[in-house]
Length: 118
Image 1 (cartoon, one colour):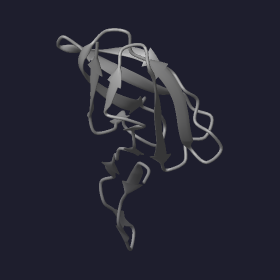
Image 2 (cartoon, helix red, strand yellow; image 1 turned 180 degrees about the vertical axis):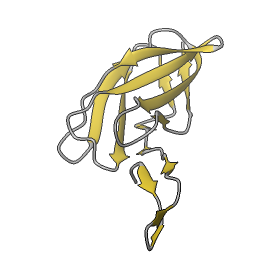
Image 3 (cartoon, helix red, strand yellow; image 1 turned 45 degrees about the horizontal axis):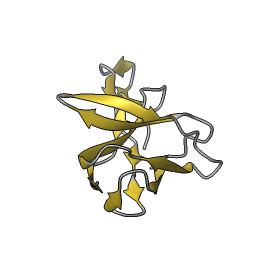
């Protein structure tokens, strides 16, 4: 659940140190997968291990890149919930991203698809 360093000792010898880096588990779930433009949808999820107080990025794919649409702060239980309105109709892809920190690599949720109807 967190980055680690490993080595072995025997008598007066010590191996090289190996660094194991890991990603956090990031969840993202919309309250609905199909909405009407202008209608609010609740985006919620959880991050493990606990990253209470850290800011998570909610991103929407725009062309070939990702654009930040919200920055919720994780609760004491490392969860989040926010309401967002999508004004343009079409299909959207969303993800939640936890930035690189001392314990984990940059970590992203699986991509969630959302359809916004006119």
